[in-house]
Length: 228
Image 1 (cartoon, rainbow, N blue to C red):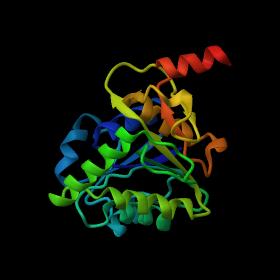
Image 2 (image 1 turned 90 degrees about the vertical axis):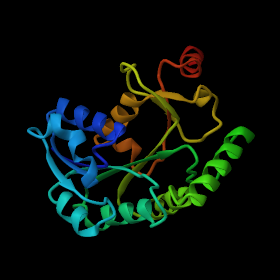
Image 3 (image 1 turned 45 degrees about the horizontal axis):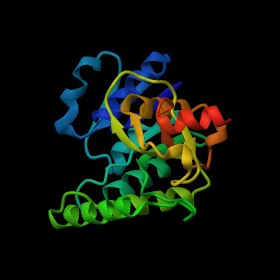
């Protein structure tokens, strides 16, 4: 299988690259020009396209022939980076390709997610600071996912909890809605977030789903397993 990873040089992206290589996939990576050196250790094993991930021509060339496209929706700056990236991927991906996107818990597909007041306060604060310094644009990530949800392509949007480094604990568990008891721990190993993204390529049950994930060894996940 040939897979394109958009945002390959980031922490999550590098883990996805490694998981794909471990599966024997042919990997194409897309990353900003200034970050190419982060992939030096893998340069002999992958093909790299460098440039802005919302560059439509770049994405067109990178996703050619790919059966899966894994995209990290990063809300950099205030130039519609997330929505531009998502739109380019959807416009140029091969017919029938599995499109897997990553984002945070703040994205809601059906409006049934339940957030704590702390979460909502943090989101508003971070969004305001990001806009003031013109660093991030969280609402554009919302716009990107809105476009994805309205598409009839073979997409999955993986919504990640808080992340930590560490050895893999295994494939995360997931639920459809934030606020479900299984997600209470709100913590996932970054490598396992990447693992879930890669595994979703071949999991057709996740098509047109927006799974919210949490580490399989967290207290809330284990409690759910014991009750089951």
